[in-house]
Image 1 (cartoon, each protein chain N blue to C red):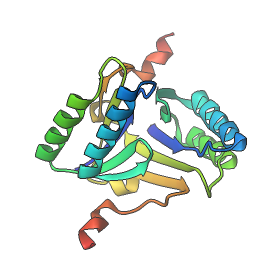
Image 2 (image 1 turned 60 degrees about the vertical axis):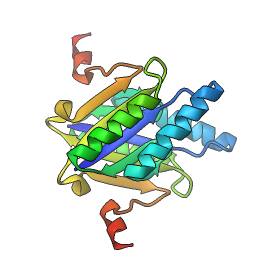
Image 3 (image 1 turned 30 degrees about the vertical axis):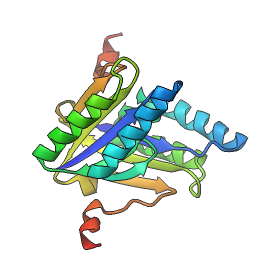
Image 4 (image 1 turned 135 degrees about the vertical axis):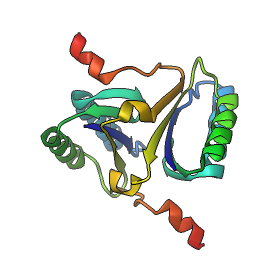
Length: 96
Length: 96
């Protein structure tokens, strides 16, 4: 399933910057960055569970925000991209 | 329909900062900010068209990125929020 992850991490402290790097690194293990704080992750339910556990262990819930959007099976028809960094095909990674 | 809008605007120049403010202002006219660069907009097809025209007139397509995600009718069941800035109900605005 395609899950869109968006996050805001408060980086006004060195700890915040560290959390931001950690969140980004975890997301990179599961999906593709499409904007600075936006990842598209093609995951199965078990991977999604793991991903959430890891992210939620890293963030500070009083300062940072995480949102998960389940885009469903027909996600390709639900996304439109305009401007820099062209849309890509996350499933295309399998071809590498 | 619920449309999620995410954007990255390159703010390394004063023009970029101006574009960022303009994008944010346009989005505020159509929906609710849920993270710094993420808005949820409950719009009809005509409003969505207007919103796109306005945003795309403001961004620099060689530097900035805009993504639209159509969340469909059952969007409430497709969103999960963790951490700061609790999820809200955009339809709840009608109650104000």
